[in-house]
Image 1 (cartoon, each protein chain N blue to C red):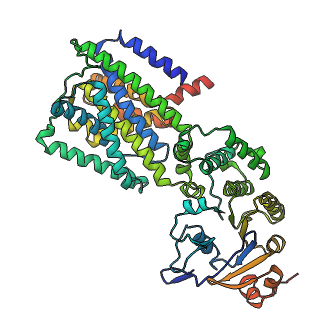
Image 2: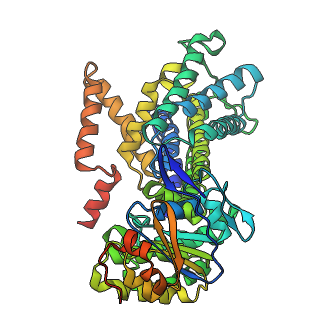
Image 3: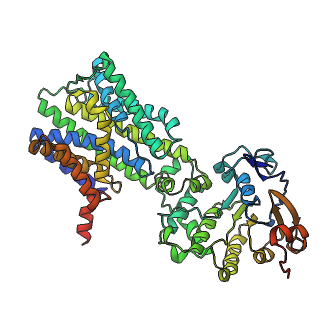
Length: 307
Length: 243
């Protein structure tokens, strides 16, 4: 994790010199990366959620509504509240979802995310299909007059939170509970006969995943300056998170962030170069990746360094 | 205890007591109810009627993990190990789950105290040279040993071995069981062994429960059981030569 700390410090330093559009891309990438890291926690236990947007969107809408209805503007307060709301929701839903595996687990998550999507779309107070805007937050009581400074402060906070999340997931993966992910994936019966509840282990992972998803959505909404159901709650949003998860693989805690950044750049340039066929480019990239780097993007580099 | 699956009676009015420290052999033809018997004791299946008492306590409604925590452990007919993990990782997670609970499960698993315990297990079960091999690369015998070693974590008071020699060649069975029983000697556990090989039963157990059609048809010493006409008919097959 030492080199990741250095990379995070380097990224923060670089942020002061990045052009505005690239800084925005980084905020979107890292926000999504946080949510994908949560999905990776589940994936390591053999569980794939098709409803990643549930907590991603919940975090985003939590920030928007807390700002609009409760008058909260501090970035730290907003992300902590979003994380708590997503975490508590995940903990509650976890009592049901921990009983399911495979396609049933995947689809149940999708179902809940679409319920939330439907609620947002049909509800004027939630902005309906258009959503609504979010003001740039304040930071530790200070309102930064320049939007560029506020974006930079948000970026710095996001990098720090992302590093903290990576550190936590890395440490967690080295613990007995973290090792149980492999155990559950390989042989649930054996985990039970060693004396630990598989459902409890899954519940813990699910709650962690929900917190990370909520954090990601919170940052993304503050970076984007708005929330809307299509980009944050729809099944397409869940699909994008899944795409990035597969792109990055489950091997490294940094992979979700690297893959998310790659995805942002890919989408940006695909839209620019082929506005009528950008989805084709995204899909073709995924197919090529599955062929040549099925364990994720970063494995290309590890193979090269071994060679 | 009784157990039915629809119209099929897999276990019919089983009534058994086992004293601490006994080594009991469970024999019977395929489908006689041996594994169902073990599954009911270890909580994998719940009896349709009756109960399981352990040291006077009714453990029937408990899930397998809680029965395991009480000290009743088992190995499986088909080895249940973590295939993608190495041998020492399999044992390490077993030792850690037994030793730790609550927030201790969030600590780094590679604790010196745990590694000391697993090194002893590796030596005792003859798995030390395979410690770095993934479980899916192990031979059938080594995988069985790993399964039994994991079941022995935490010094269980009752250990149930479900066909420990299945899949092991006839020539290697005795050596395998000698190693297993030698490794189990220091456990001082009550051991129940489901086995088809009567030579293994004669050598390693002091009492035999013979099953047929879901019932216990004989409860005796190995020598007496081998001479019992119903055992000869239902378990050994007519014409079996008794040594």
